[in-house]
Every structure is written in structure tokens, then in C-alpha cells.
Amino acid sequence: MPSDVPGAAVANVEGWRSAFDGLLSPEFLTGISVEARASALAARFSEPDYGMAVAETSDDGIIGFVDWGPGRDGHAPESRELYAIYVRPSFQGKGVGRALFGAAVESTLAAGHGKLVLCVLALNPHVRFYERLGGSEMRRTLIELDGEERELVYFEWSERGLRELAAP
Image (tube, rainbow, N blue to C red; front, side, top):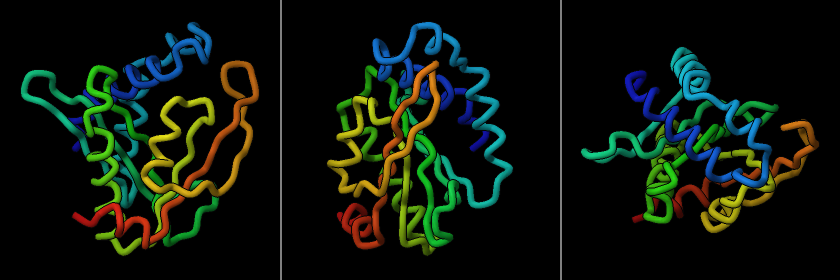
């Protein structure tokens, strides 16, 4: 829901700053603003087939989010892309990320799509999360980020892998 955007933006920024502390420059990390992330997330709600799910508690509000939609970067039309998944640092390691990932998987399958893809910075300390969920590495590319070339890792899940994740 668009009303979830402010809380999702906070989770996004807190997640980035925590995950990349010491890996990217402090100037880069402080340059990531909640307002800019909220604006980018809000704009996605006008895109066809866009989805977002949030996790929240009554005391803390939104503690994490996941969003997905049509594949970018030339992904096959039968695929969906997981754009982002972030959990506020104090709630990591408690199954929140897995539950959010499950929401994207369920939506992907319900919409009749047979693949889910995502890309993540290789230096992201949470890369193993995607490996543990059965993601298969598709390829690697380089991008310019924070004044240096950084490696991106692309993962994919086949329909079979998605169905296994969705099984009770």
C-alpha cells in the first residue's frame, strides 16, 4: 500500500547503512536519504504488476519490506524481479526476511510467473541468505558505485524452486 512507503523507506535506509557499514564510504551511506527512498518507492506504485509486502509490529511499526515486479535488464517475460528486501537491523535473524521473501514467492506463483530473479552487491554480507533460499547464480556484472567498480550477483529461482519455498 502507498501508506506503507514511509516505513519501508526507513527500513531500506537502515538496512543499507547497517549492511554496508565499513564496506562503502560513510559519505555514500549518509547520502542515502529516507526521503529519496520514499519517493522512489512511491513512484513504483504506478507501475503495472508492482507489489510490496511489509512486516510490522504493533510497537515498532514497519520493520521490513519486500517489493517486486516485472523483470528489468532483459529478464524473460515469464520472470518477476525482486527489487528489494530489507529488514531493520534489530529484527534481522528472526525469520522476518524469509517471511517477506515468501510473500514475493507466493505473489510470483499466483500471477503465473515461473521465475524470480534479483541482483545484489557481491560485497553484501547477506548474499548467503539468497543462497540458503536456493537461489542459483545466473551471472555477475560490474557497476560504478561509491567511486569504485562493484560486482553485482544475479540470482534466480525456477518455478520448481519457488514451489519448494512456498510449500508448507
